[in-house]
Image (cartoon, rainbow, N blue to C red):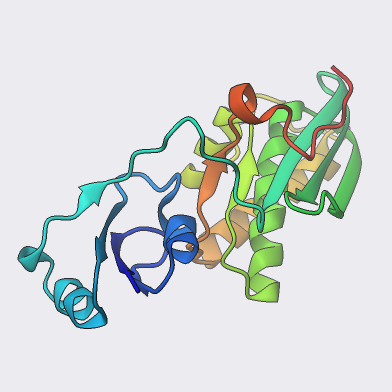
Length: 197
């Protein structure tokens, strides 16, 4: 049975099946892994990365999304306007959370949705990835800050309180869950899409 060593990924280690290895490397920048025929070879390679030559991850066009993952999306009626976001399990299409606030923007909703999913994963002890179709929101989460241009005032205070809470969570919590860009061109609309385009 083959074994897979992940040197750089969401969770470095040795895995005894491709699916577990794949979950740790897909979408992870600079991921490094290699397949070995025996556990002894894998353990030796993992213990000394100089003894092997890991390869960079290459995704083929036939790759499909990981089923045990949450996909998140947001919708906004106006910009700013009534904003909501939700998280949906990719495999079952079951909605896991849905949040609505009176005044916000789509980008804020996308940011909050990712952080909400990460916090939920931490509570449940899940190592799943999060899918988002928002490049900006992914960058904001990785930076640990919502870089919105929305003005903070009495009308927007509720959404800014939510942003403050999300940024605080990012400062105080470490996570290894990959945050992956949903490939709409290959997979269609993200499962959490509100269908209002």
